Amino acid sequence: MSYAPVALFVYKRLDHVKKTIESLKRAEMSDMTELFIFSDGSKNIEDAEQVNDVREYIQAIDGFLKVIITKRDSNYGLSRSIVEGVSEVLSKYGKIVVLEDDLVVSKYFLKFMNSALDLYKDNDEVISIHGYVYPADGEYPETFFLRGADCWGWATWDRGWRHYNPDGKYLLQQLYNRKLHKVFDFDCTYPYMRMLRNQVKGKNDSWAVRWYASAFLANKLTLYPGISLVKNIGNDESGSHSKKTNIYDVELISKDINVEKLNFTQSVAARNLFKKYFKRNIWLRLKSYFTLKLWMAND
Image 1 (tube, helix red, strand yellow):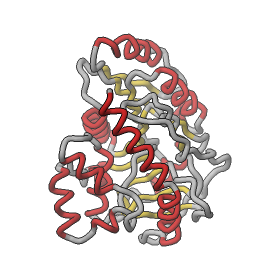
Image 2 (cartoon, rainbow, N blue to C red):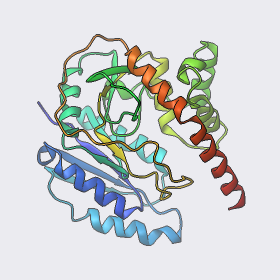
Image 3 (cartoon, rainbow, N blue to C red):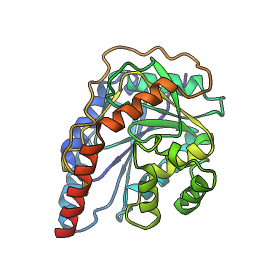
């Protein structure tokens, strides 16, 4: 097995970066993994000192096969930084594991990602591997497929990333034309269509919703673990226009996952658990959304 390089995207949150790096260093196979770190340039003078603190820290990172750092001279923003960084690494290596600076990973994260990348490398039905699963009320299969793609600790191949379409307007129109908008929203339990509409209107610059839509329209599958290998520690008001919430908190898996080839169909049971989770938290999301809108209006 050849090990996929990891691309890590960082900005100004030093404490989060440290936790992400330390968890990644503890993961099995880290010492055999090349780590590419993309450090975005500061948006303004106020952010410059924090960006420099992060850059000073990442310059001294060890514990990996190799550490390659790219320091952006200007502020790309997360969307452009990820799209260009992922494309760059894939052009050289053909496969990649992708993390952002607020994701803490399990000891078994890299092993799962590499095993799955190797197992499904020749299966075009599978577009990506994902490391996070929602804390649903029920038991997921040990591994399972869902239609689409995801963004909290993921991996793909060059063949999978070729499906990424940055044209949100086209993706939105296709979802409506093919009458897939309700299914895309997990049967109206999560507002992915609203996210995509807002991206088209310029209200957000989400690469993730376009990645999901691109994979979904291509009818591709993403493999998930039954217990999360990733924990998002960024829902603490430290990010741009984000409010504090614990609805995404999970306990990381403390055992290895058996990765075996599955039938190429999405899991109805897992999809229903996602929907159940979305329904359970809809009022909390709405409260957070309108609080955020009020905060932005008064900012």
